[in-house]
Image 1 (spheres, rainbow, N blue to C red):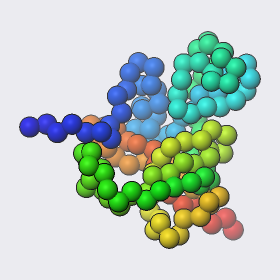
Image 2: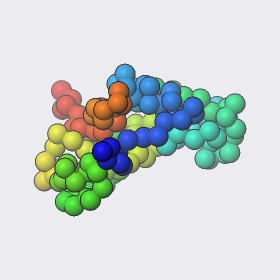
Image 3: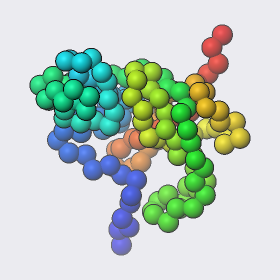
Image 4: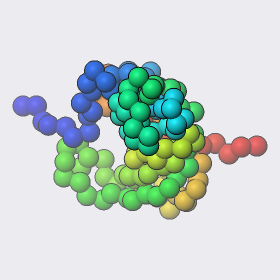
Length: 141
């Protein structure tokens, strides 16, 4: 019996480039040629100036971010999240400007700090999919 999974994206024709790039270990954003602003989650139009798809294009993100906020999840009954608890759900500020909901991995919750530097990583999700998550960035120096 196939169990419904709530952690797999439903890629469509529009979001296919995003998920294909993630499978290759690259994070994409959308940027508007009219107002110059980047946004995430991917939309066919600019959420800031309402420019249409002809003025909004995919671009590679740097993968750098800072931690805006987080919550440690101790209970989740939706498959397969229940087997992953506890995990850290987070909102990060991407270097390019947009905020992104994600998960922080490879870091104890006690070590998390607002404003800490993070970098994108990708978790395999099966079916050839990889999901962008974030981990602490190595110290500069």
